[in-house]
Amino acid sequence: MTDAPAPAGDVIDAHTHDVVLFYAYTPIEDTERVAATLRHFCSTFGVLGRVLVAAEGVNGTVCAANDDENNLDAFKRTLAACVPATATMPYKHSKAARQVFYDVRVEVVKELVGWGQMDLKYEKRDKVIHLKPREFHEALKQRFGRGEEVKLVDLRNEHESLVGKFVNAECPDARNMQELGRFLDDTASESKDREVFMYCTGGIRCEKAALYLERQQPDIKAVYQLEGGIHEYLEEFGTDDECLYLGGNFTFDMRGVSARGKDDTSEVWRCQRCKDGEPVLAPCGVCVVCRFPLVLCKACMNAPECRGEWTCSHHAHLDGIYSYYAIPNLADEDLTRRIAALRTLEGELFAHDRVKTANKRRTLRKCYFRMEDELARRRAGDGYDADVCLKSYCRNNGCELSQCARACMGFWGPGHVKDAQALATPACSI
Image (cartoon, rainbow, N blue to C red; front, side):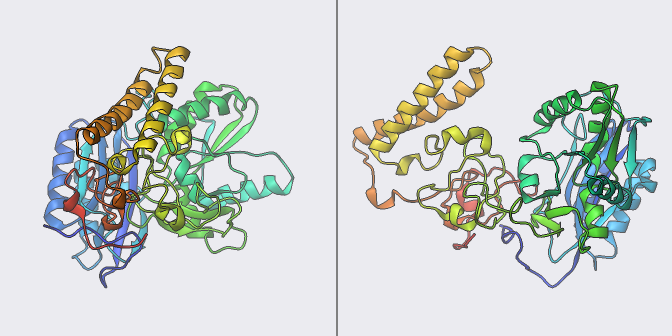
């Protein structure tokens, strides 16, 4: 069995690794062939990461040790041979003290960014203007200096903006591109005859979002997009006293954060649960209901009353009610209380809209059915053990949280592992 990676941030070898982030919107006819070629190359030469291939283009992040005969350069050549337009595609480079991915996944998808806007084709528009990091910085600085109200929108998910964001940016309470789309609809309604600035991690989410915003608001004055995203902005301004980015740049790999701007604990880089502690980004820190990544501090991650079960902002009303692996270690009274609360919520959802809330009610039922089964098991003679009632469990693989190798889930992890022992290692702190 291959050992699971150490927790994010640990240095496990002396090699320096190179990481490249890239995307290109360009027509690809045979997506399966391209994916198969890249899959074969990566598995042969030890290049790990995530690559998405679609009819509209390619997007990915890969990592390799820089002493492996320039494997990343060979990767670029292989990609360019498959997709010629990528030969001139800009790559965003960064360094890492270790391999930042667990494995390699090359997947064929319908969209590079899963937004569901299949009719929105990437194309150049006069009102959509790409600004290089210095141009973006100067434009914002000038408008802030004149005291103007600037419409600056963050096109990333909630947990990413909790880690870091631009000064005065509007950050959506969103977990996916569909929710970001609703945020953009609201932005469009407020943007008639106005300028809108937008940014994301590397630029790809803004490409179509800018086009969508212009389509939704034809009378928008201009949409300014940060070319190269936060990644390239921090390369130029991360250590500058005038840096307009607060906190860190969240990455979908083991690093968690790839670069930082100004320290500002009043707005970013705080635990979303207690609002005070400094976060420890770990793949175990996910919502117990939907497994959306959370930004939690060490104290909240280890709080015995939480049992390794926390909720995102969208499921905060289920905090202390919904459970998953911890059910066998909840007291009879606690289970009875939770079942009653979940049944009440189910009834309220049914009364509100029996059609639109069907999936939510199904989620609640699955949870309290498990709780009822547990109570029935105890009544049959296999009772509750009070000595283990405070155990916490990893939401992703079921092993005790103190034994989880922190490689159990996430964009860079091996996915949901039902065999808890597959990722178990000696206890490690978080």
